[in-house]
Image (cartoon, rainbow, N blue to C red; front, top):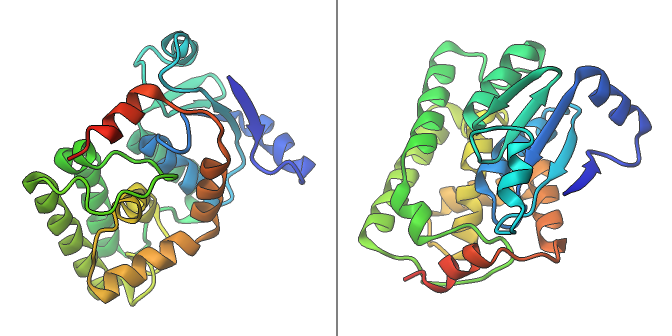
Length: 240
């Protein structure tokens, strides 16, 4: 298990994290798309936290995760005496605890749609997940193009087009960066790895996402990881 500070150059950040009691348990940054979502949200909105990274596909992975949650998966947020697991539950908890940061859009209609598309991302797109596993360090052009994955790519494109045209105004999905963008950040990574061709406006959105400091930091740290996850690498090799 590796523990790192959110910002080792700022001593007050760690002190604030301890006071707030927020510790985020994640997996490898190269592979763990679910971990990426709350980490990006917390980093983007300057919510102080301590990070604990548990390496995936190791003999002790399950036992280490079980130290924090019996659900057996990452991410997990430790908030004082409370344990919150599941990326969407974590983000909803953070939105409640930090209302002044506006993790969800402030407009009622935009917020309703942001929650809807985040929930759809959370519960759907299984073909895209299985055919195009996240691996930030890899470049696999043309792989993973199963019929189901192609359908999911089409649906993601529809969501992005509607959000950007109705609310985004050529910025993020709902104008300002929100939980919804954090939820689609791993999809942006997949589209980059597998070289998915997108309409110019959607590719521009992906470019803005990759330039966002929180996402750029996650990518940089993912690329610097020396560890691999054998089962995840097998999934990549078996991608269509």
